[in-house]
Structure formats: structure tokens, C-alpha cells
Image (cartoon, rainbow over all chains, first blue to last red; front, side, top):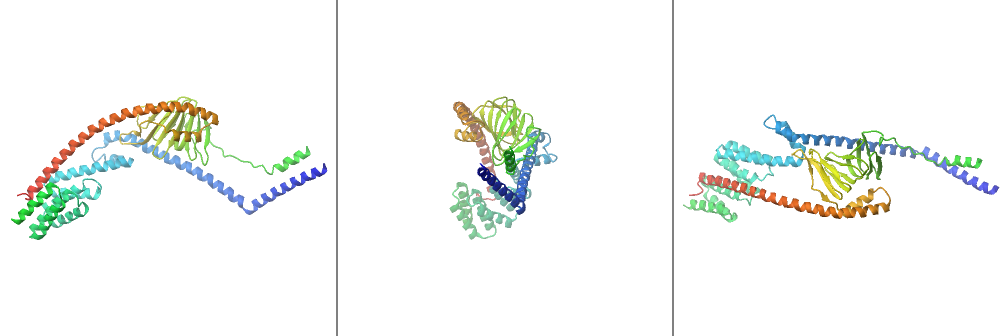
Length: 228
Length: 239
């Protein structure tokens, strides 16, 4: 009985000693402090993440609320110069919508440029076409804008700019039918500058490279005119 | 007795006391809470909620829970509203659903009962039946949140995500799945029919749009042709 009691007592004493040793070691080597600090920081980070999520959600809800009110606000106050802040706000609410709006603006500008061109106001039409090329370079109206810009420069007798624009068209849109027409214009400029051989080369190049009926027939007609 | 007392004294060395931080869940509103590495079960008055790891929600009023982030499984016992920045979902009682929230979408996958869904900016309520899902997105230029057409749930995906968040025993889950399977089959048929009708409507409207575009294109071509003609005449390209 006493030996059993002694064995149990020894076992318990060993465990107590081991626990005491572990506690003392942990307290004096600083690991527990680091662990406490780590768990405190983790908790702090989680709280911050939660606060951040709430803030972000608050902002998103506000943005959605503004977007919800936007159609009626645009209808009431979106026109003219005074409506600019509203239209500006509407354009940043959603990226997709903003892209659509950019496309529409490019189209409207292009129509405006064509109107100036038809009215023979080449100075203004050139400005508009330049704006389309610079600000809406991914819109489908860019090749046509280049073409009409080259033509505008020609009408303004700015032959240097006209040639530069045509050269740019050749580099950027070599397959486009309008580039063929622009090249015929280049041939015409060479003719005016008495550079007939170069003009013939241009017309022949157009006949070879642009199978489109209109372009080729015009190039042929110009070539015939040169022979005469 | 003395031995026991001594033993207890020794054992007290080994007892670790965990003090949980006091949280507002179920005590006050509004109260925001989240789950971390493991799922978290929360009992609210009228609904039992399971937050998948990483989910963030806000208990805004006694019967409203706002979902900010992640996946949440809900089981309602009385009228409860689950909201998001893009729209809300309501259910009267005994409904189950899995809600998924990302930065720009809110998805509702219904597992039991009929949910009444309302997108932001639209006064109309849409009924979303069992075994179907609907997704909502950001508010567009028309002032209404984008909302997808209801679709039937993908069987494998929904069973997996339900199993992860299910509250209860395995046997109960099996039973629920069997009931759900029958409802899911009917939902697939129902949604397929709706999709067929919608596709017909879309094709008709697309054909109408195409004809309008064709007319516009023709008008633009005519205008371009006149411009070219003017260009030729001005520059004497034609004799």
C-alpha cells in the first residue's frame, strides 16, 4: 500500500516539477510573450479587416445609391453646360458604361467633323478629326478621320501636312480602301509638283495593291490623264 | 479526501483558461462579424447562419443580415431579410439558401422554400423557387442593378457546397438531399422551358435590331458614296 502511494506520489511530483520547469522556462525565455504579442496582432489584424470591409461596403452602397438616382438626375439636370457635373459623375459610376459613352462621343464628334467638311469649313473639320485621332484612337472612325483630315489639309493647301497624314495612313491602315484613295491624292500632289514619274509609280502601286473596284478604276483614270 | 485535494491542486497547474473576447453577436445591432479559418455557426432570432471561412456579415436589425463578403448558408425559421449592396432576398419561414457575395456580384442559390428577390433600384419583387439561382450585379445606367435570368443549380457544385455548410447529422443530410433531388429535377425542366421562351423572344428582338442596323448601314454607305463623289469631282480624278 505504502509503495503504491509512494509511486503515485513520485509520479505526481515529477509531473508537478516538469510543469513548473516548463512554466519557468516559458516565462523567462520570452517565447510566451512573443506568442501573446502574435495573437494580439492577429486579433488586431482581423478587427482591421472587418472594419475595412465595413468601410468598403459603405462606400459601395453609397455608389450604388448614387447610380440608382442618376437616371432621374440626368433627365432633370443633365443637359447643357450646367449638366456637366452630372454627366461626369455618371461616366465614372461604371467602367462599362463609361466605355459606351466614349464610343458615343467619338461617333458624335465624327458626325460633327463631317458636317464641317461638307460645309467646306476645313479648318474646323481638321481640328475635330485630330481630336478623334488623339482621344479616341481605338474607335472605328479613326481611318476615315485620317482620310478626311488629309483631304482637309489638301483643301487648305497645306500639302506637307497632307502628305504626312497619307504616309501615316499607309503605315497604320495599309489594307483600308480609304488608304488607296489617299494614295491617289498623293499622286495628284506629285503631279502638281511636276514629279510625274513618282505620280505614275503611285498610281501603279494603287492598281496593284488595291483590288477594290472604285480605287483601282480611279487610279487607272488618273494614270490615263497623266499619259495625255 | 486529502489525496484528492492534493491531486486537484496539482492538476490546476495544467488547466488552461481560455477567455473569449466579448462579441456583439445576438446581443446588439448593428453588429458585424466574420469567420476566419473555419466555418462559423451563428444563431440569430429567426435564422441560423453558417459563415464559410472568410465570410463577413453585418447583423443590421433584428430580422436583417447584410452580406459583405464570402459564402453564407442560411436556414430561416421566421421572416428574415438577407441584403447586399446590389439587392435583397426575403423568405418567410423554413427556407434555406446559400448566398455568395463578391466585389461586384451577389448570388442566391435556393435550397428550400420560395425566396422573394428584389434588385436595387427596382420596386418589383421576383420569386425564386427551390433549386434555382439568380445573380445580381452593380447598378447600370438605367438606375437598376443588373440581374441575370434565373437558372437551375448545378447539381455537383451545390451538393458539395451544401455538404460543407450543412447543419445537422449525416443521415439528415442524406434525407434532405433526396428531397432536394426531386425538386431539382422539376426545377431543371421549369427553367429550361423559361429559357426556351426567353431565347425565342431574344431572337425576334435581335432580328428586328439587325434590320434597323442594316438600314442605318445602308444610309451611311450612301452618305460615304456622296462624299467620295464630291472628292472625285473636286480633284478632277475623273475626266
